Amino acid sequence: MTTEEPQQDSPQGEISLRVLAMPADTNPGGHIFGGWVLGHMDIAGAIHAGSLTSMRTVTVAVDAMKFHKPVHVGDEVTCYTRVARTGRTSITMLIETWVRRRHNTYPVKVTEGRFTYVAIDNDSNPIEFAKK
Image 1 (cartoon, one colour):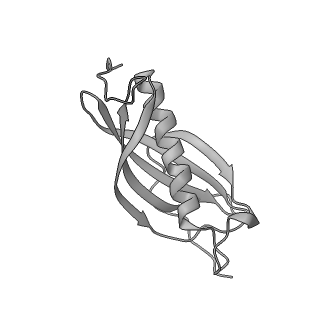
Image 2 (tube, rainbow, N blue to C red):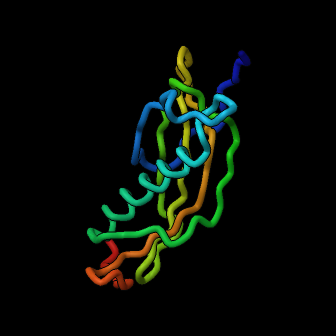
């Protein structure tokens, strides 16, 4: 088992989702499956985007994803979100995923990405929202 040093930076944005990584979420290599992490990041961004638009939002793009370190079973996974850009019908969120490893008190950045969400009406058409 390797020991990780505390990172020099700290999470940016607001906590939008926190979850515990479980054994059922592992890949054949024994780490948490990257798609599981990506899915939770998408949920976190959608929660934040929806709170800003007060409307239903859907994911239209994942513009970038970068995996820095693996997520392990038992890690406390936290997604931090912040607005990068607001358009007429869309919001682009920067999402960072940090973990707190078992037996460690400091957070470790494991993933970051850029997700874009669009507000939609009942017919799934993009709709302009009032910026808060």
